[in-house]
Length: 567
Image 1: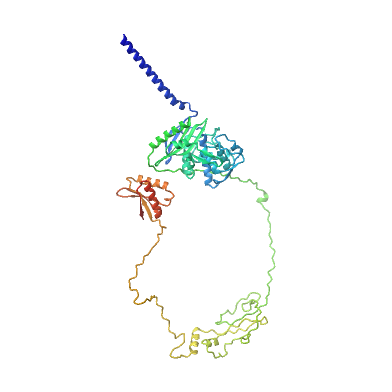
Image 2: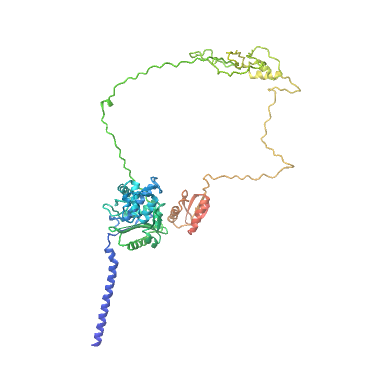
């Protein structure tokens, strides 16, 4: 009997230990599942590949929930848009209204009537998630928070966020203010692609907000998850703990949103699990599809004035316009001082020319009044007159016979008393006659002649340039002439090659990633993939020598084969 009793006691102890272990595991399971079952808000999650926008994981992604401070993502998107359009600047002073100063925490501590630069409001709203700063941004851009919320909703429609409606700029719970996990993920991707120059603000752990140094509400997740660089947290009792995050590992980038977390730690843990699973599922190289520009629809209101036609407007009375004849202008008569000069050869004038009324002709046109001058020397006659038939005086000048046969011009009168001068026209003299007269005037002397017709023509000048040198000179062959020409493409005849690949898709993917990472240098370069016998060889052309060397140095730092080539 004793062995049987001992055996039964051992079996009873084993059963007791089994039930104790089972109850312990049940308690652990309930402890794990309790936060999910007792969550303050419905849970939703959405994960996409940021390079293509394709979804990777979804759960209640279209359910309209409270976005909480994720709303500030759209507030910042509107501020960045206004800056890029030139409507405001980062140093623009925004006034702080009593409405903005009275917003509940989290807040920067703005005071009513204060003016603060927009850059500080952006830092406070993005990093600290300050409600007063977000309200000040909205009122400064649109005039009132209600008008700004309407503009936010219109921008959401333009970005493809069809299940989002905004009532304020900060995200505190309000009726009619809602969004979805899918829409917030779309907005996070838009911030990354549309405003890369401002995106780094979401990865800051702290910043100077003008009146205070603010710390990031997303610091724990940024420090804990490898590759995380943003974006925004949110919390209200109705919404739970929300987060839109973006992370990059290698060539992969993901954007995800979690709604309805039970705590900061639970939200961050779920986000990390979703991103880890997403990085394992997406391929390393894909074709990037950037989001298109927002489809903004501008509404134009055209008002037309309604005017009833009247009899006076449709049937105007006939009016007669009479132009009175004005008196003709009075001609001012001026004393004409005839100016004549002998003309050689004479210009033929038609015998009958219609003269205008008044008798104004070229011969009798008035000359400008001459200055009163001193008496002319005695050697110069007052009014010389040359006659064609007077005998020519003897002169030793070569042109004396010619001058004797030509009429000299009569000078203008020096005195106002002299009104006219005689005009004697000489007959026309041919050039041959002038030459003969010169030849006859100068007799030949010493077997030579000074006649222009008999003078020999000058010998043509030789085009040969003779360089004199001492002695025999340099008899060596001339050095070869080196012709240096500048390329017409401005020195862009260089390129780089980036190794060999087994498929064209891999080669094109490398070129696309390189263009994204080094867009400032490769902005004007052309991408090309050469199909060789050994494989597909990607490369960039239309580069300068300096840019080609710089690109190859960067690829070398990434352990990528690169060679500079001259095209």
